[in-house]
Image 1 (cartoon, rainbow, N blue to C red):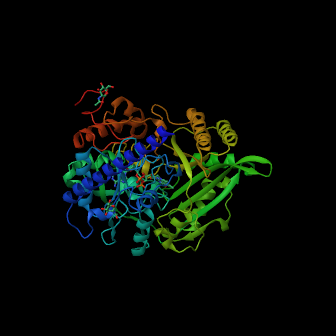
Image 2 (image 1 turned 90 degrees about the vertical axis):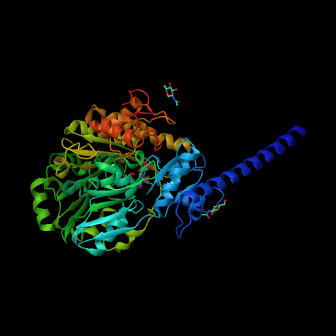
Amino acid sequence: MKTQIFTILISICLLQILMAISDQTHETFLQCLSSHSQQTTTPISSITYFPGNTSYSSVLESYIRNLRFSSPTTPKPLFIVAATHISHIQATITCCKIHGLQIRIRSGGHDYDGLSYISDEPFIILDMFNLRGIQVNIEEEYAWVESGATLGELYYKIAEKSKIHGFPAGVCPTVGVGGHFSGGGYGNLMRKYGLSTDNVVDAKIVDVNGNVMDRKSMGEDLFWAIRGGGGASFGVIVSWKIKLVSVPEVVTVFRVERTLEQGGTDIVLQWQDVADKLDEDVFIRVVLMPVNKKTQKTVKAKFVCLFLGNAKRLEALMEESLPKLGLRKEDYFEMSWIESVLYWTNYPIGTPVDVLLERVPESEKFLKKKSDYVQEPIKREEMEGIWRKMVELTKPVLTLNPYGGKMSEISEVETAFPHRAGNMYKIQYSVQWKEEGAEVSEQNLDRIRKLYEYMTPHVSKAPRCSYLNYRDVDLGTNGIGNNASYKKASVWGTKYFNGNFDRLVEVKTKVDPGNFFRYEQSIPSLVTSVGKMAL
Ligand SMILES: Cc1cc2nc3c(=O)[nH]c(=O)nc-3n(C[C@H](O)[C@H](O)[C@H](O)COP(=O)(O)OP(=O)(O)OC[C@H]3O[C@@H](n4cnc5c(N)ncnc54)[C@H](O)[C@@H]3O)c2cc1C
Ligand SMILES: *[C@@H]1O[C@H](CO)[C@@H](O)[C@H](O)[C@H]1NC(C)=O
Ligand SMILES: *[C@@H]1O[C@H](CO)[C@@H](O)[C@H](O)[C@H]1NC(C)=O
């Protein structure tokens, strides 16, 4: 009994000491941050959230888009700086260097494996959501977009000023510009205009020494690296200058579903033959999922199209190239480009476009994703095997996105994003679930890993390529600490970047030799890495 009370007393004392220490560290940090940032209308202390501040949890959770990383056991940041000014970013970098803390940079928080807001080292979050200004210049056909803006906000702002301009980027409007642009960024304009990154013409970045640089002062190597190489290995990207692209006043969309019993396999095979070779104005995505029809388990294929032209032209094109889909006149809908953005997000036709300004997605889920590239047609028997595997695993959804068009015209070395000519389509594997718990989580991770394993013979090899923005830590990580090994990193690095990995390592070594900007899949610096001689 006595010892118990004693233990409790000791614990209380310890707790008080810890709290006192942490109070003191808060003070120290805040002092450091204040003294290194400019006196703006928003003092940095008013946008810095410690665990003791009442809004710490809500700020943290506001941009977590995968419930797997929102549990009590998820590592939490020591504090969050929600910068409203460039000098807040500079101060955060400087003070984290002084105090030996890691920074996680978060824009929209859509990283599939949560790397923008979790870490195994003591860390803080530099949150960009307050920096989300968008300036659109229609006359000169460009825009400056801050990293904390969402794609939906960007699309909205463009469409507000012009009916015949758009921008090639992702389909989900809540995705953040910061991660998306720096990792590539594709959507249904990709076959006509390439990736977001292919349409970036300038950027503003804060480097490890707190210098603010644009394209000219950062130089072409770093500007190359942040277009597809992931921003967070190199610095904090504050804003992007993008080239707007033309869209017609009227575009056409369709969305139809076919099960295997309705000829699904034949249609997918025909789609596979033509999807990457069609006119660049056509983009047809296929979403494949196991479904239960009465007592029968089958696979459903959903075909979703954006066409940059009117219904009449699309009808003729479909009859010629994809007749097996059996489209009827009623399947085609003509609308403006901005309405097509809503259609692709599954909003009912007629939904007011200002839903694009909503920053919170409609539903939150537990999820895991993976990706592959298909370079050789998958044969009928192989496809039927995949359907059986999907039905057996019950959960996984496959999304097939066609390449070709502009994607094949841009060289592999033009930007850090390497997956260009030779790729027919990309597969995204996805499992989502709603129930909490380690067991259900393991079951789902197991499902997607088994499917990925099963797909090995049908996809790109040596390296088996992956899309950086479909973050997948199963591909390997650097391990913890400053001691990233070149060898370890090259395993996942060549999958994401192919032959561009070594150039990314060179740029990293030049701009951040001490590897301050690091995370589980950051580009290693040769100065601090193991396994390759320093330059
Ligand atoms: C629902 C959903 C739909 C998606 N749809 C698409 C799609 O259609 N097309 C597509 O290509 N991808 C899509 N993605 C993937 C998406 O492009 C990536 O997750 C992207 O990295 C998200 O950017 P973010 O700013 O929201 O993410 P964050 O999680 O904030 O950041 C992702 C990575 O970028 C780094 N980063 C973020 N901001 C900065 C910055 N300012 N400076 C430097 N580094 C930074 C982070 O540290 C992290 O490493 C989707 C993801 C989700 C969850
Ligand atoms: C959080 O609390 C600290 C005191 O610990 C205070 O200085 C700071 O201003 C608070 N932050 C916010 C955003 O209110
Ligand atoms: C890094 O790793 C190498 C080899 O594993 C080891 O020799 C070295 O001491 C490590 N350095 C640090 C700073 O941990």
